[in-house]
Image 1 (spheres, rainbow, N blue to C red):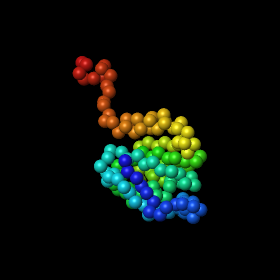
Image 2: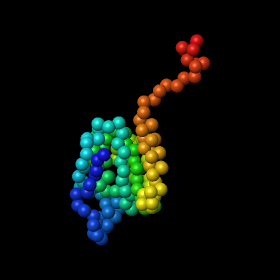
Image 3: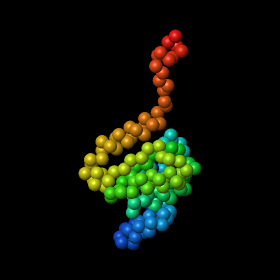
Image 4: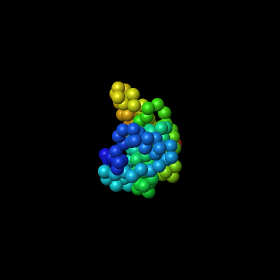
Length: 146
């Protein structure tokens, strides 16, 4: 696990306005990254909030700055009510490729805990998507069956 942190805290009304402006103008605020180099993994799951129907500024900065180090990515968004498709599209634009998988939860689902089953299913889907594929051939088509 790793964490992308904003260099400047977003407390109070000024912080809220910075969130809005960063989202509307797709600004890339300064961030700190605390974690391993992403290119050592098969897939990186990006978990980010949605601000004003767009990818949160610090995650936008991280994806932009680390795009050449990111292997396949999956995107998991937390939002008030909407914006996840726009965030997924933005990650695709920044990395130059579509995310492996994407999912979204509302803040309400996170607070009341009802997201847990879907989160587990998302994790399983990411794991299964990166599992080595095994060729499956019907025995009647298999050269060994002859």
